[in-house]
Image 1 (cartoon, rainbow, N blue to C red):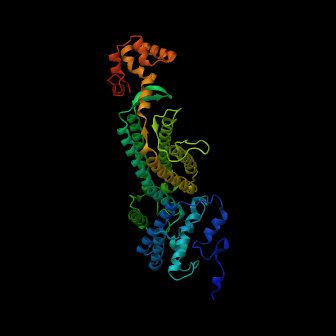
Image 2: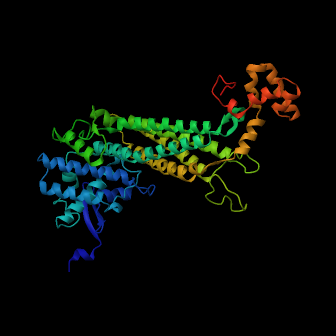
Image 3: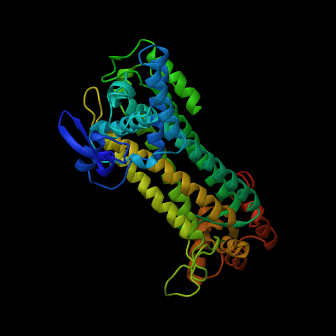
Length: 473
């Protein structure tokens, strides 16, 4: 019987010393040290990031074989190992905590070791026999954590953001449809949370749609600099230990693998020193969050009630709202949207602080930037989809309540400014507040305007038309 089958561990060593590694795992000694050194959060890097790194490993192996820098048998085994990971195998082998060695060396070596051991097994060897396929000499040939890690960050952010952008387009489309369907309903406008001139509900929702379209464009623009890859820069940007054609060929293969419009960085030193492009993208997500929070809060206010709040709209009821109050329904989807927005804004602060903490040729805080940025993209993509499907799509308008508020609003007297003057209009408001009578009742009682003309001026269509038709909107 093979003695090794009785021992659940194998021995691996690096220049720090020897370690016992469970026989069944595909990672090696450097990953094991990271597990031991960083029992911090229990969270590992997102799968999208790890897969982006595997794409890079595959592209590098292909190019190094083509250029004669890597033995074809070893290179092809590395490529096949990468394909197996990309097809869904071995994902449980990427185990390094996100709070790890600076620059992400631990996670990078985790990837190198897993690919190496998969290739070794496919060649008939035993895991840990790095004389067959070495994680540094072969899998990592011509590469460094310092150019692989930020390249993988860029690819992962771009890939995940596709879904976010698509979901935002869908949300804007539904908001525009709601704007059209609600366009005949007049409500009181509000500024400073006080009565203002009337507005159509459709006009209000068109503003929401336009704001989201604008910030979506901002996210797409912020993604452009991320398409410039510093791969091939190796340790500090000089490209040491790489073939002159390596960088351009790897970028081209990554373009084909990911279907992203990737290109070589114009300056690989900048691509490795600076994380400004991630700050810019995170800022675009922060702006989106601010807008989503604002819209969600408007919906919560308009939905307030049903008997003691505004109750201008009705949000879909998706779950009971209280453990003690029967029949209570809360605006839980907008509340979720708020919390996601708050989290993204917090992530942005982390990205900013980490990005400014780089020194000289490298920013060692990249693992934090990667984790927080991908977290923001992921939770926003999910939240926007849920916000759209479980809230926006099912919004109904309380037409009677909206029109009642519109006619009771003190803001409608603004329509009369060009006709009766500001001072007289202010007197009408004062008397309305003192007596509790509507603006319309006060004007008729004081015979400031004839009833027929007043009714015409205060008709819903007149009050919400563009300037030049008796209203300032």
